[in-house]
Length: 321
Image (cartoon, rainbow, N blue to C red; front, side, top):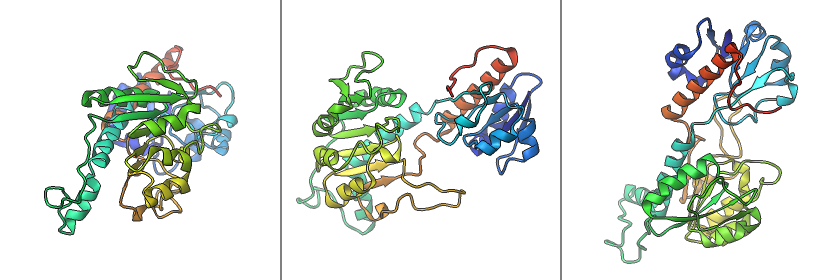
């Protein structure tokens, strides 16, 4: 079995991946670029980007396996029906940890305190009676926009703090009895925003969810509300979010998913709008799920599916196309 790996996130786990592959597997690494001759010979392609031109060249391809959950950079329509596509997850714990950390940081005003102290200002009611005392997570009501793997893992962590929570999902249901105060469909989104102190966005991006959070929803969240987006940037309207932060319609936001991404790895601003000038925002470059724990689990899944392919067994986490 000839396996072509192009995902640079897997390089730190190269030894682990190769050791887990079934006997007789040849693993080739080309993270800086994909040679056409290697693409033609590859039976398994491990990477998150696959174009129609790559599909045309990959004449021996049997399995396309991103070491990620998303397949939005893969031209699924260009693949022949006999090519299998599988994905993998394992980012839930890392993202849940990010959400909890961001919620504490923003609800407790740590960003502001850090910035002010660097200027010699002690932004605390102990030293300045005009500074409001922040709230802990213990009395926070948390709203989940989407309640899949990420939402469930985040809720498990937040329960330790004593939070309560509600959720809206596309179906208006959750997979199990999660101990939420209420669950409804996205028609109740404004109610969720109005009732909650912290809102966690992790819904999938599609034609129904794009732009689902706009000015009205952010206004409902209110001047003490915190928004955390770990789903996809366009779930939240770009201009509405900027204006809400700039004008104080909401207290703060943590944004890990953006409106613009580097095309070639050289870097770029994450938005046309100057979010970096705003004081109440935690900006991260889509790294909430990028940890060693995440990718250890993902390389194990990839290797296990290669073994199943070689043995003629059903693969796990297949993506229809």
